[in-house]
Length: 576
Picture 1 (cartoon, helix red, strand yellow):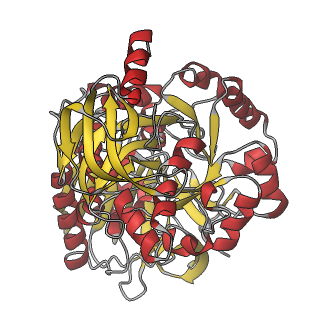
Picture 2 (tube, helix red, strand yellow; picture 1 turned 30 degrees about the horizontal axis):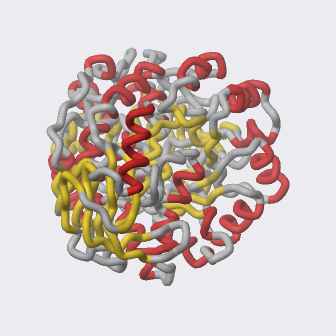
């Protein structure tokens, strides 16, 4: 801010000159005091000058609506929406989302720093303010092949970027606890720049959690229940109440929010698909759920605004007060939280669900053509098993946690024979970044597949290809079709494509609209159920894409083998 801008702001606040914009007749939510104050909001340039009685060059009547600070999603992966940053901004801003804290972990695992650069440039094309965390674990664990390896040395330059708030969710919690040298170097790289460190520690407790918190890891979005939430709060961490398309933790945790600890509680999505946004909303829906669960509306709004701003050191936003950014959401009420209008930096950017600015998109050439296979054929799926007693990855209802179990399968000449009555299918991860030729196979229980195959290039976190099928031939067809379409999602039956969604941006995101993506996903889900037999209690895409994530218990599959998460070690597919 220069001297002239500051002078104008002060004079506007004092009433000496007209405001650039006055939003009249508001019920202003004061997140500092918990009050609702009736008055006008005066805006000078991009900042709020004051709340009171003002005159402006432009005046808008709020009609007695509630004025809240712009909502902040404190942790989200843009890539998991399957749309570009520009398109996600178009979808979220009409729901009051003025700032998101994005961890581009997915695209950096595929494209390295080139992926981060693309995301940051694309983010400049949306009015929604996208702040980034630098991915901390690329790959998420040193037991698989990602598209890139980002060590402490490679972090030093991007960590200096103003729009990088800190180090993203630190998933390698064993490395923190056991003080691995490369982990310490990464943590110190963030600390040297005075930047934050975000957390990810599912199931961690006791002295292990204490050691993790001692590294001054800021918060965690992986709390499954209130005791886990309370333990983290007691250690000085923030807790992010997550409600996304895949993981639904908010209702499990909101009962643990009290008047004493609410200032350390935030709201986040983690993953949010277009269909969820179009049908349910964003942080506006989180607020509804909080209030329905008995949280005071102003407390809920504070969790979505001031708390998040303070946690991520965004001291220029999170409140409607003099000198704060004029990120303002007009709400019809504090129950349904219907968003009437959204102002971003003092500019009307959304009205009644419509994003108003013109949309420009970043060129995707640098992050396209990301599927690279070597010597791939159905022969890579042959397992040559000597025992029919095998370990299986068992899907647990309602989330991405799996259970390690054993089962007896039918073999013919050492190869798996699919039995639809058993609900066990072959699953494979095919390396797609460096042409290593790696293919690892295992077994998945509880997915419900009866025919055909499903293949994705979205396979957390290294995003190799993950494919399940009732035969090696169906799986081979699905993988080859994925390569042809530059990644995404493919469903196959009887050797033919029955549904697909190309995702040319790193094999993770579509370059089409959110509505198009939602329609494609709806068609994919429908075909998965009616054509392939996957049951309604399993989300066929989101469930499958987490079966390769080796930092979420209890057992997962990477391109190098079957991984037992609690022991942090590989195990044999054969259980004997």
